[in-house]
Length: 444
Image (cartoon, rainbow, N blue to C red):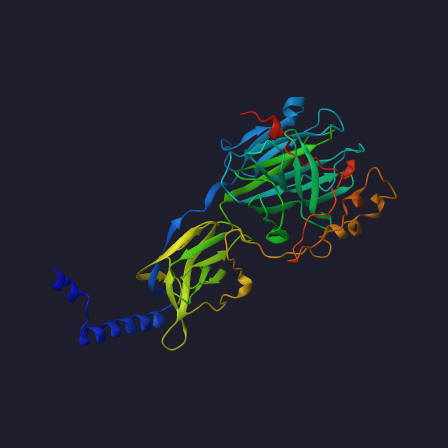
């Protein structure tokens, strides 16, 4: 038996030549196959799923969510419904000037990336009461701590106009006591519907995208929002004059904003490509054949192939691994390469014409973050410059006070945007009670 095994591992001179010819033939085939088929020596298969929850919010099934809020205890009118246009949450304050909130909250979740599309009802509201305000937001809040600690991507509207912002809050079991603006923009022709993505580990990392554009990013935060998280879709108002509502669609939550690939051929470029061959994300393999592809700014799920490319015998680019067919890809997904030819339809073997570059987005870990500095017209320091003159602080200090929101931002040693050095006490006309009041008033 020992002799047999020993012989089975030994190649004769003729066998070695044959093996080299087979390998050369496969390489030549992979470089010369027609566009309809490309032969790769390895196959990528999924080893871990990153999707935690997907809800289009258009099916009429709201069983995943629990509805409640401070409005319920106050006896304030509320409505909720779901149809083909989305989930609709409506609210009217019981008393003018008194904040009331109504929300849909998820169960505790292991997700670190949260996404939803939010819609404000209009550019202004007709209620002319001094404190009239309405806001809508996607909130990510700590579940284990008995505190209202959260981060939110939200929009608000009052009699003078509307704005969008990113806010960090901490508080006690009943309400948020400290609200810090991280990014803010007053009107400036912003759409009333925004695509919002929040990525956080609850400790030091926070990244927020609006419509796929990064508006805030830091890896040096002190968030104090330990996971697991609850996500809230919430409306709040002080207006007792009218029922105001917001519409939500396209909710999903994933374990991260990256896709990991293991055991790929060494010195390869790994790509995610759509079905037309367009590269959506890419990364180079490390010394172990592993790669991390950043997809957090892309709308999920992605539909396409995961592929790797190396050099052929002539120094050209050749596909070395691929999924056997288009796959549905979420942040947090993991794939591994296994040896065995995979006949992949739909592409040529050579690298795509829009070959991967560093700008496609790579990351060394699932929860790492790139530096993002708010651009002109989008930072807190420029917020006052965008205010219409008819509602400037000098014209009506009580109604306006947005300049109180304008605070000096600082940068840490890595050049990352950090929260303002002082706590902002927002005046009434622009003071969002961005607190899921509900968390302390939760009805299970």
